[in-house]
Length: 339
Image 1 (cartoon, rainbow, N blue to C red):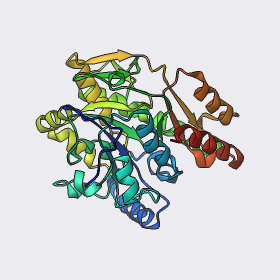
Image 2: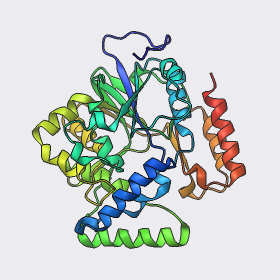
Image 3: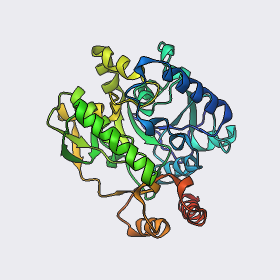
């Protein structure tokens, strides 16, 4: 049994963290992914796949998961358990002893997809995120993080929840059209960016809009940046019990498709509709990404770390940076999460 770290206080209403992770460099996982992609290529439903959703860089493991887990324990010691959702994989550094030290529970896809085995294997983060609320033993209140999210300053429970009320970071924006013409235009733009700039657009904002639409929002949506997301397990359970077709629709997509929705966005807008949210700007988060074409990623990261105002940073596409820059970024992150 996983032990709760000594610095994690007991709480009658605990808060867990859920982190999703994959090592796309693993030969077994790569073979499984390529087989699923080949199978989808023979299907009439191939149309609508988002190229970036099957790009190998989406599955690349650069070791950020270590920084993510250590940052949770260093800057949010009140987190009870960390549920690491994987596909028959475990990070090499995460030995049983390390799992106990960090309070990590390994949760395989087969556990959260129990009863929905027909949807496996899946390589779609939206599909996986639609099921994370089914982690065994998960607390009612939990925080969801991608494996490239890193906490860089101390945070409290109140930064995410006020009782059962969720604190959301972001801003209201207009919902854009998802007509066939606009989707075609996005496909064309994606092709140009990939061909000439080697940039990958995942259409994540469209997924957020689709999530808002499912909750009844047609004109505007609360856009969430890359931050840790506070969520309530019962929100997912109740919605999918009443609208099972929404769950099945997403589970059918093994790779990202244009009709995907971002489950976190769905949950956020359900909470907004219930007036169960505190909305605030996302002034305390930042991103370092190879797709942003920054010329000084190390200096930008150092500025973020020194600002004192940022509490979260996302690191994406580390393998695409020049090697000297990647090494300096790694050294900076190691210094931040060091105990």
